[in-house]
Amino acid sequence: MPGVTLPFPIAVSLGDPAGIGPEVLAKAWDARQAQHLPPFFAIGDRRALAAVWSGPVETLEDPRDALSVFPRALPLVQVDDPGDLVPGHPNLAGARCALDSLELGVGLTRTAMASALVTGPVSKAQLYQIGFTYPGQTEFVAERCGVAAARAVMMLAGPSLRTVPLTVHVPLADVPRLICKELIITRARVLCRALQRDFGIEHPRLVVAGLNPHAGENATIGREEAEIIIPAVAELQAGGMNIVGPLAADTMFHAAARQHYDAALCMYHDQALIPIKTLHFDDGVNTTLGLPIVRTSPDHGTAFSIAGTGQATPGAMIAAIRLAGECAARRLLAANAAAAAA
Image (cartoon, rainbow, N blue to C red):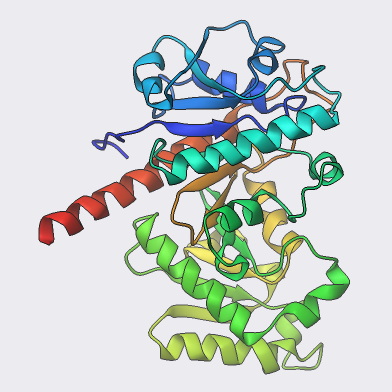
């Protein structure tokens, strides 16, 4: 946020060293002045950066030194050597490096040595082979922060749209049985609070998508809307929340419709991610709501097929760093105001 200086840099885990994470972060540092980015430092292996970039890198003894290093070089906290490293060719050593980087990033942010955490893209397939048991980085970060999975809410954010999937990495066939009134209410409350605290929206306007075509067509095309979604929305409205739904998902994402809400709660992964990636493929951000720390991530994967070719674009990484800085700044202002009022 303009006029707010963060007391600590932002931590960025590089993700899988064989993916495009190192390249897009290096390009973000190159664009730091033009994009007015807050200071950040990388966590990962120096060779992953050297393999795709010839710019200056300085290894840190203390992450807080990143503030002084940042203007002249990309600051780096080095993790253990990941073994053989070739862009575009993931291996288990690289997966361990990615996990170590993520773990360290969470720890540094939780202990206030970083103002926020940005996580680079990882390969879940590789992580699963080294014993990673979480559906994704979101659930891992939540667990390390002591937050129940149900209260760690994934939101996809772009300049003109924010969406939250009610269910995430589950088979589509399982979605109807996983949707319940309590889950909708919990997700909506976390979303509303986060929009106020981290996005500066005093009175958030929320909409809820239906599960079935035409939002159930008055219970003639499925009954989830009538039996689950409508009662949940009614209870939230009774509690004072500005929320409407269920709406037909095929008509709620066009430009005119998006003017009437600040975020959309969707029933499943693709219902939330398809509109975001259609509108904001190059600058979409994945952010985790409900955590004691600010965590964002570029909304793209490792892109092993183009890693090391110079083709990766840094737009989503830049957007993730910028959003992390803005959210952290709002939390800082709120904390300072509360301290002054005490």
